[in-house]
Amino acid sequence: MTRQRLVIIGGDAAGMSAASQARRLKGPDELEIVAFERGNFTSYSACGIPYWVGGDVEGPDRLVARSPEEHRARDIDVRLRSEVTELDLDGQRVRVRDLASGGTSWTGYDRLVIATGARPVRPPLPGIDAAGVHGVQTLDDGQALLDTLGAVNGTAGRRAVVVGAGYIGVEMAEALLNRGYGVTVLNRGEQPMSTLDPDMGRLVHEAMDGLGITTVGGAEVTKILTSGDGRVRAVATEDAEYPADVVVLGMGVEPETTLARAAGLPVGASGGLLTDLSMRVRGRADVWAGGDCVEVLDLVSGRERHIPLGTHANKHGQVIGANVAGGYGTFPGVVGTAVSKVCSLEIARTGLRERDAEAVGLRFVTVTIESTSRAGYYPGAAPMTVKMLAERRTGRLLGVQIVGREGAAKRVDIAAVALTAGLTVEQVAALDLGYAPPFSPVWDPVQVAARKAVTAVRAAG
Image 1 (spheres, rainbow, N blue to C red):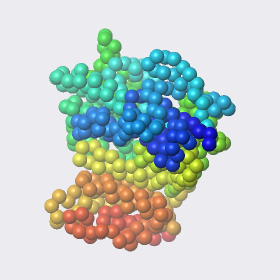
Image 2: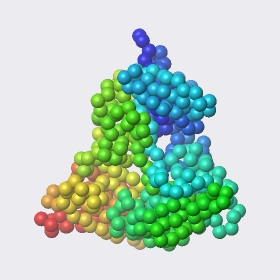
Image 3: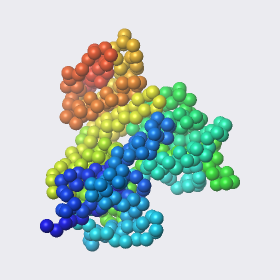
């Protein structure tokens, strides 16, 4: 039997999950696996970087699920500090640059997996490349930020500016606050967390202000100001300047598809690669893609979206690994579930926001309720706000957003399952959920919202 070669571009969640699954199904005598990674780590939790920076977890080793040495012990040829710079799809080969020596060479493949991830949004502002300005996407990025923080430590009145108030922005604001910095968050929108509707984002804003984090809405950054030694000293908007010893960019990420675009592979509206249900790149029989560089089907809206999450990336890798090794798997889509926190405030969402539903032509009702994480009389009961969207006439659940204290965020999983199953709010209200005073009120907050949504759907006709 002729041995085939699988080449993987990217050594994190999707790429190495694909490699591991393929190796489970085919031994090294049947399938050679070569993985190129331009960084220094494989199979790590990028989601854990803010908690490493904030001192909650040790790192970076604690964030690595499987080291290059562990992969190599399973006959997966991991090549670090190796950047793929060109795809020759017709010739079935990739050009690779050794970042240590600068030399380049071609490597052929029978099957190719593109798992190039996402890159932080970094607008071309004056001073954006100054020392002390950091994007945070990889473990190397996290270490670079910690090096900067270490150099600034001991300075009285240390100040940090976070540009952007999405997941990374609010998590990094907490991390820097934990490090003893005065933190200012500059956000283009009026409220943080654009993944929520503005009324729910306002709750996050109020909580951040209460923690001592200065959150400035409607702030368009125009430049990064530097001192004589080239280090950052402030961030300028159209209206003000905000002093800074360190700046973290938290403006979100975009699919890293530079290679794929140059090779003519299909990308969607948000720039992510387009694949079929098997995660095979559309129009290519020998190329698969997964992780933060692809778009996926939103099961609620029916549209394709870019949703960069490690949970999805690992599932993509499992599907890809099965398919490239001659097995079978599919990735049906997502409902857009995500959770985060800023200090003790938990933030969760799944499904559609109001503007998402409007964009696809859905008519809907919304309800918002206040409840608690436990029975109100039980010690430790914490407040929780739940917002729910339901389709008019049908009552189909469309989305849920939750902001609250301990015990709030993971309740969104109830809604995620309901969305995946296509349940109506009436069916959600009737779910047989677990109850005891230490865990929930008699009516779980999600079901309280569902009951109110049932009434709203009936009233809307």
